[in-house]
Image 1 (tube, one colour):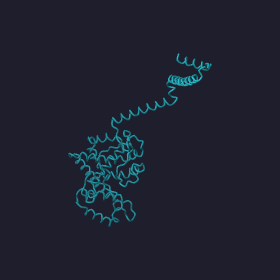
Image 2: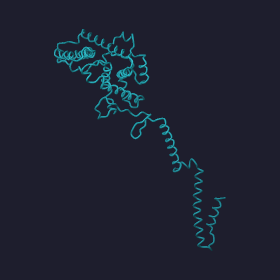
Image 3: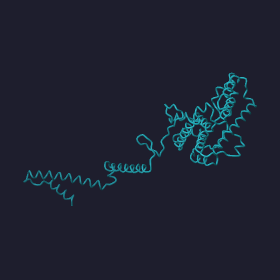
Image 4: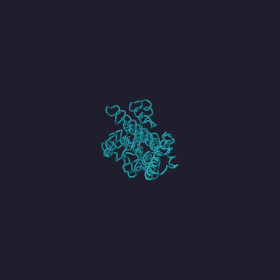
Amino acid sequence: MSSDSTVSESVVHNTPVFDELKKKYPFLVYWPDYSFEGLRGIYKSKYEDMCIYNNGSVYNRPYCIKLFSILESLFIRRGLGANNKIFEEGKKWFKENKESIKLNSDEMNDFIKKLGVSLEETYVNDFKTYQGLYGNNTEVIDILKLYYFSENSGTINHIMGSPDHKDYYSTCKFINECLEIYNKYKNFKCSGNNNITYSNPSTICAEVNHFYSKYKLHLYYTLRGMHNISKGTTNDTAPIKCLRDPSESSFFGENQKLSTGGKAGVAILSVFGIFLIFYMLYKLTPLGNLMYPRGRRIRKMWRNVESFDEQVNFDHSTNMDQPNRRETSGERVTSEKYRFMFN
């Protein structure tokens, strides 16, 4: 996009949607205004093979890829052909004659650059028009989510490589939101049928394509290495696994958000568990004696009383068998001890 248009008028900055996104996703670092600068979302890597020269020249290749990426959008996605016959004929002619075509000259470089800038401005103007139409707020938000994901793909990759990062869970949820958006539009508005017939020039499709290239290049293999993506997963845009949020708890193998009542119940059970532990320590370990020594003396006294009662009962039964036997000195001591304990 040209510098004049960038300076004169912002596209999404200072809009309610932009402010809402910036507040909702504070972990995103880069918030540039919306643009297609550098053929973002327009550049098609699928032309890399077609642009290989037999003579080994590497100078023409980047210009070739840019040129056909631009032509695909200008001639077909801009509605200059309901079918792709004209474009396919042009590609066929180029393949047959490319060895004699020099695309890296200053003139061709300038031509390709001007075409690219015009196309970038066209996409942005389409977005601005679409943004102003009633009822399109959801799709505008979806477009901007994918855009700011792409602009922050490096930051997102860094966070997802560090599970202890404070923004890890929020970032993981954001990735799944973007994957859901991608699959929604890729399977509907930007489906394979639309791509084949070149009948859909929507800006969201450019964002969908760019998101996928950024996700696959900067993030996908990091997520596989961190086990956010299962080894057996064949769908590379399936939802990823996120580590459990601290406000969630696992019940019967499922993650469930704890309600206020649930959190209160957990707190009560925790207090009861702590009380039960201290009670067991008090009753079954020496800790109780240290905390309440008087209780220890009382328990010892009652154990002595029980032992004395057993001795008295034994002596009484013995005396009943020997009525004429005289009291021994040991029995007098026991009797004195009994009186001492209860006086």
